[in-house]
Each structure stands twice: as structure tokens, then as C-alpha cells.
Image 1 (cartoon, one colour):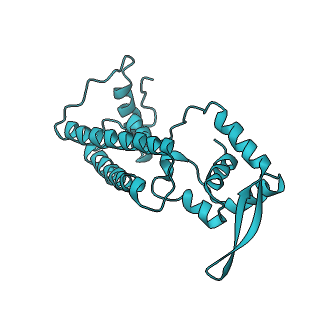
Image 2 (image 1 turned 90 degrees about the vertical axis):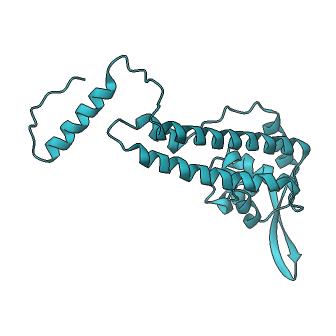
Image 3 (image 1 turned 135 degrees about the horizontal axis):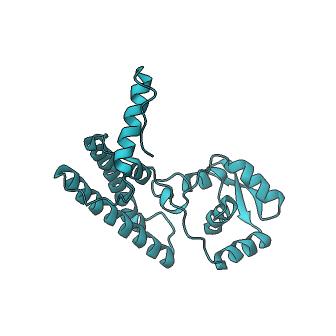
Length: 210
């Protein structure tokens, strides 16, 4: 999903200011949908306007003039072409799971439990937000959008359950058996010790299997 299409999608709900659009990308549940950073909304709006996908107009709200953006015919056509196109499979980038993959036996699992507890707190916070979202009396959510929120709730509930189970597994020191056909776990420990030993002035000629 491109940033341009995401902006068109937001404006399709209602004419929006740059501030309105920025808020859509920064609310608590935004990471579940957008997965991107939008630090330069206004340059993107200018580009879309220059290319004829949106048009700006002044609107007076509570005595203050405000610049709003609306889709043009070209913008609606582009949005609908994008909606009709098959969506790409999401590219998940999750630091927690990258750390799980790189965690080794010399690490203190109590630290990882703290990582999991922090993640659970954040997931519970987002879950509380999206649970009240469909009945907050202010947001427009289509019927299909309601199904999307239901999906997000299911994912978050499953994640929280998995975190609880994983913490219990770590506390009981009952990890599942690893798969290590090349003996990498022991080699990782050896390589780490060699690097630390060399840093401290140990024997740099020490050999380690790779």
C-alpha cells in the first residue's frame, strides 16, 4: 500500500485537513492498518494536488478558516482502481520476534519476560481502544470496516493469550526442544566467548568451529 493511496482512502470518508489526516495515521490502532510512518503529510498532499487527484478548498469552522482536501474525479477513479486491485500480503516487521530469533543461551530469560510484559501492556491498551471504537459515537465505520475491527480484536486477543502462555513457559523453564542439526547453539556461545575474551586481551589465536 502506498502512502498516496492511504491518504486518498482517508479523504474518501470526508473532506479532511492535513491535521485530520495526520491524526488518522497516529491514533492507537493505526499500526494495525497502516504499518507506515507519515511524517511528511503536507508534501504528499501537495504532490497529490499537483497531479490532480485531490483539490484544496477553504472552509470556515467556528470562525476560523481551514484548508480541506477533497478527491477529484481522477482521485476517486484512482482510489477505486486501488480498492479493486488484489492487496499485497503484509510484510510484518516485528522487533520482538527478531529478538526471539537471535536470543541465545547466555541471555537472561527474565529480561525477555519483561519484553513480553511490556508488549502485553501495549496490546491490551490498543485492544481497549478498538473495542470501544465501534461505539464511540463519533467515528464513521462501514459494515466492512466493522469486520476489519473484529479481525484486529481477534489478533490482539490471541497475542495476549500467547504472551501469557509464553511467560509461564519461561518461568517454568519448560521450553520446547530446539532444532539444531548443525550444533549452532554451542557455536554461538563459543564465538561470543572468544569475542569477549579477545576484547579483554585473551588469546586471539583460539580456534572455534564454524
